[in-house]
Image (cartoon, rainbow, N blue to C red; front, side, top):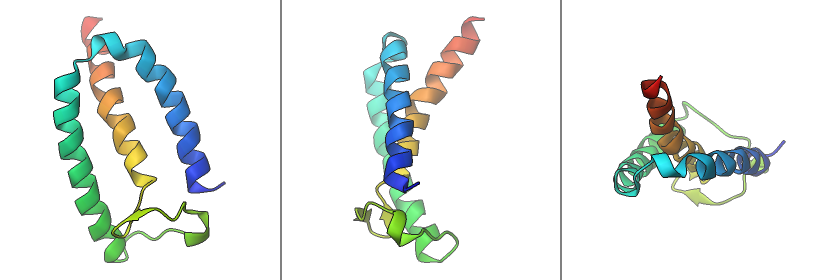
Length: 94
């Protein structure tokens, strides 16, 4: 399975989840933390890929890169940005 296919599956499931929990999340904190997390992902992904700690099979990537980091890496940061606070709210209420 290619990385874009895996990313599409993960983001599809995430989109359904995000629609369900959207009323429990405030937009401003998500936008601010999203900018911070995407910037950190960009920096640290480039460092770990550039130094050779992590390597990808280039034939399975979409080809869209931000420096050394494939665009697919950023999908998981998006998922974490919504999943973490929504799960926190869910467990806090119980």
